[in-house]
Length: 370
Image 1 (cartoon, helix red, strand yellow):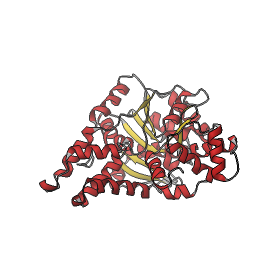
Image 2 (cartoon, one colour; image 1 turned 45 degrees about the vertical axis):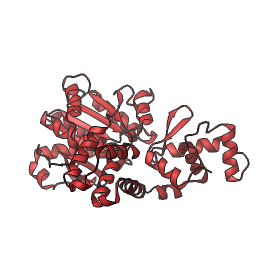
Image 3 (tube, rainbow, N blue to C red; image 1 turned 120 degrees about the vertical axis):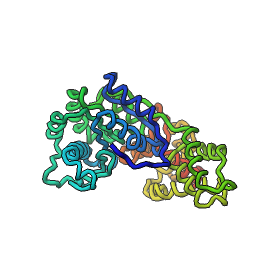
Image 4 (cartoon, one colour; image 1 turned 30 degrees about the vertical axis):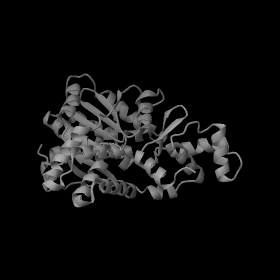
């Protein structure tokens, strides 16, 4: 399949080929990869794994469950149906026409397609999808992004139905699950109460490193005048400062290219500010209950013992109620770890951390603990 050339994309052909080789050799039928948000998972799936898998003979289907989290079954069903329909009607794929699916963003052969649940020719039931898959003449690679949505209690039935169908099609359908919450993904595949228990190995997504930074610097310096060139070592430090996030580093480069005279430090600050603003951290903070804010400040500061007596006294004093009740803190933690928010994750018993390190940074800057 022909894909548009992106000079700024740092291709990861070797990594993509490792997953393809494992699937083709029959070593596994599914993998589950985790990494924090903005670490390059989705770009890798769409710009590396998808085109290489298609060249290897797979029919590829991508669906982001976070964008259809209220109806993941419909999202997955429509993604598969649209992909197979595109195989039958290549012209519709090329011109970007065909059925539109409401509220579900999916990718058909690398092109964005919006499927509509009210399309008369689309059947969102899994039974119809399995029939279409069974009649399809190619192996399928199903890429389920933000798969932790399936771990929520309200979607256990969906997960059970999905596993049931995939179990008997392991030879034909390979699956890549990705998620931004290591804790939730490990629970999804590691708890006996979960439908996908022991169904896929859970492993960290290999993160981008100094080679990515050097590639981006070379592209940037090809545009800049020699006297304004960005030193590689300064860019490497900026990457670390920005939590090694490829997405935020791109914002840094954009800011530097727009105004190289301002220098690296200003570009770093611009990247931070745009991330804080675009992700609506202030609005999230304003929507939180007072106890939730205190819990976030406690965790942001890297402190431990959040349910201990000293912490309960501290929370109570801040709220003007004497000593805070243990159940109030536990309820707050449950709200902040809810899959609909995913602000905190439980990394060990009694130890928590921010799912988004940039939100933690914002809390420390804008609302430092007293």
